[in-house]
Picture (cartoon, helix red, strand yellow):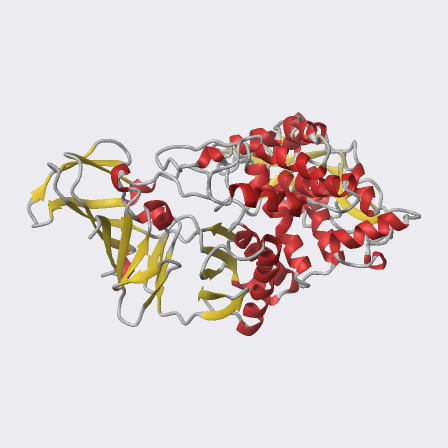
Length: 589
C-alpha cells in the first residue's frame, strides 16, 4: 500500500467549539516539521490559523511519546527518527465566515487550512480523512470516498475541500450532466425548488461558456445568517454566507444568485486558470501577484452577466447594477491614489485590512477590476465588429492554462490583444498602471453613455436616473459614519478634513442641538454650500466643537442611458452583448 497521510476528526463536545484532530504522517525524515497554513487560498490575508491550535502531543504509531517542540508561530518540530508520527491536537473553531471554521451544537464547518497540519515532505501524497460525526449528523464534502474515508490526491486538494457536518438534508439537481448538492445551514429558503432551479440555470450557462464542467460533482454550502455576506471558491465546492432576511426581497434573491454565480465561475478562473505566482501555493507566507484585478475583477463582471444570460435578471436591471458599480468606483477617492495593479499586489495589507483611511488611499481590485473588465469586453467587441469578446479570452486562457500551470503576470493582457487582433497595450496602460479616470467612450459601441448626478441620500446606490428635477445644491460635510454616531472616514479634500474632524469622533450635536449621525448628515444636506455649521463631538473623552464650512456635494452617482439617434450597428452590438433588443435599453429619462 502506498504511503499516505491519515486524519481522524472527531467532535466530542460541539458546544466547546473544539475540533479534535489526529494525523499520522508516514515514516520519513529524522526530523518532522508539521505546519499550519497562515492563509487560505482565495482570501489573500495572513490570518495566523495556528493561533487556534492547542493541546498538541506526538507519539509513534505504537503509542510511545515523542517531544513536539514549537519553533515558530506555525511550526511544530518532532524528532521522529524516521518513524511514522501521530499528532493529536485540538482546534478552536468559533468564527462563522467562509474563510474560517465554526463548530457549535448545530453543525461544524471545517475549512481545511484552519484544521489540517501538513508537512512539505508529504504534501504530494494522498490524504485520507475520517470524520466521526455526532449521532444524527452527516458529513458533506466534495471529495470522493473509499473505505469510509474521504480521499484527497494531495494536501492542496484537501485544503480546497471544506467539510460541513450536521443534521442536514441536501437539496439536489443536475446541471450539464453533473450532480450538484446544496447543503443549507440555517433555515432552508421558503422555496427550495426555486433555489435549485435558479442555481441549475446559472451552472448550465457557465458550462456552455467553457464547454463543459471540470469536475464530477459539485457541492454548494449555503450558510444563512443574521448578517454578513461572502463566498469562497474551491475546486469542486463553495461556501456561501448570506443574510437570510434578504431572501424575501427581489433584490436580495438577485444578490444571492450573483454571489453563487461568482463563486461557481471560479471553477475555471482562479481554481484552474490561476496566476503562475500562486503555483504552487506557499502556505507559510504571502503569495504576491498583480493579476487579482483579472481573476477577481473579471469574475465580478461575469457574476451579474451570468445571471442576465440565465434569464434571471433583465437587461435593464443588469445596467442598473453596472451603474451602481460605477457609482461605488467614482465615490472612492482612493481610485486617484492607487493603481489597479497595486491594488492587486497589495491585497495582503490593503484590501483585507481596511482602516479609516482606506477609502482615500486604496481601490478594490474587485470593484475597479469589474469596470475594467466590462470596458475590455467592449473594446474587444469593437475591435472585432462583435465577432469576439472577453468570453473568447477566457476560453483561450482555459485551453492553454486550464491544467493549473499558471498564467504569467502579462498573460491576460497578451491573450486579450491576441483575441482582439490589435495591440491593447494603451488600454491596459491607462486602466491598470495609472490613476487616470477610465476611458468610457467605448460604451458608445453598444449605444450607451454615462450620466452623473449627486446622490439623493446616503443610501442612494446610483445606477438609476434622477427621480425628478435636480434640487438646490446640498451642503456636504465629507464623512462616512459607523454605528449610530461615530465618524468612520474623513474623505480626502472634504470640508470635514479641512476643518479638523477626525475618524472615531463621536457626534453629539449640530449647531447646539442634539444630533446622531443620521441627523448630522441630513441636516448638513439641508444647508447650502458655503454655510458654516458647528459640529460637537467627543474626541476620546474630551468635548469639542468644530466649525465646518460646508462644501458642494460631489457629483458621484452614475447611471447609464442610450445615446440619441443610435445607429443600427449600435443597436445590434447592444443585443449581441446583453441578449436583449435595443427597445429594452434604458431611456434618457
